[in-house]
Length: 81
Image (tube, rainbow, N blue to C red; front, side):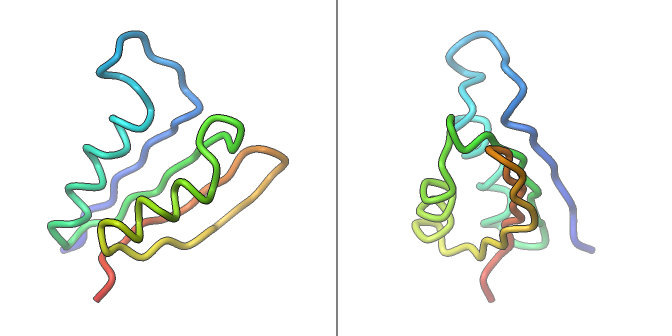
């Protein structure tokens, strides 16, 4: 069974461990293990699409752009099989 995770990086949380890229990296590790997909909402002014694409490339994951609305983007990461 495939697990589905969701993270909204537009939400601001205090502290360095709640940095958006750190939060994203933690969930991407679960996708790397397989049997999981991750839906991500991000503000391109904070984390550009190119950065999200590079993270996918570096981890051997597939990324699909689902929606782009002004500066808000929604992507899905999955294991590239």
